[in-house]
Length: 340
Image 1 (tube, helix red, strand yellow):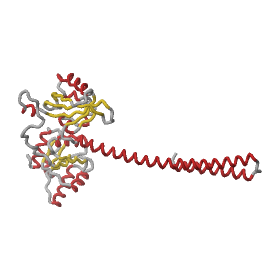
Image 2 (cartoon, one colour):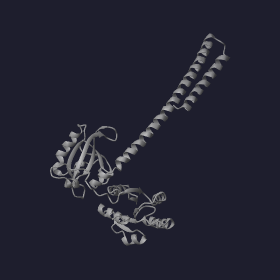
Image 3 (tube, one colour):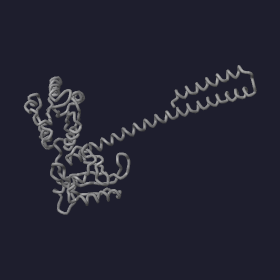
Image 4 (cartoon, one colour):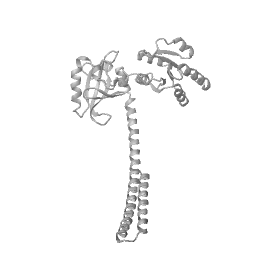
């Protein structure tokens, strides 16, 4: 019952008591009637006191509710910050249960497995471990659940449609998103090139000496596509090479982003609802003429019959199919940005 309903109930009781009191006062003043009138008067006073107490309690509850709401909003905002750090971290991170079922995974780890992050949730990490290591790997996972320190596991990982690589997994017990215990936090590293550099009998080093910097570090790419899964995949592939990716789902959002900043390269899907990639390239060309920009732009398509010549004639500098290898995408971005 809220305060308005409470006030209404008290008012109805008051009216009924006053009506009864009036009736008693108009009746012959019998001792029983006088006693009843006193009792009613006392009841009114008690009800008034009770009403004041309840109102005070409601005020306190309202203040507490507002404080809890603010705390909850703060917790949600803080969790989002940490989740974004996890999601976009340059290292591969994932969370599994003791059986190796993936509960969470970031873009970098998903790119190493060559599968969209959303498609990996609920799948077993063991599916990507070489067959002969399955039993040992599962035993090590269960063992790690009961050890407080970080465990190092070296296995051969077999990504989808790619060559297997040597991997180092740093595993420690943790919690699921819900807060429940029983999860494993895993950091996934591809150590193939480091093993090749290591001398016989030495442990591989995670940082190779004299390693050359990534030629795409800091490059800014604006990617336009109405499909969330495609945005995730392209982001994961590009971020592995140091590219800063901004994704939007429509032509309108892309133009709004261009009002805020100028990317080094724009990649756009061709077929999108409302306005397609051709509408976007026309508006980009108009914006370039207005601001004196020249932004390299590439068309991306999921349709094999899409006309490459038409895309290039419309103003795109390059054209690529969505089924192309990630190396082709990286090469295209490097070429467009002049960092090939």
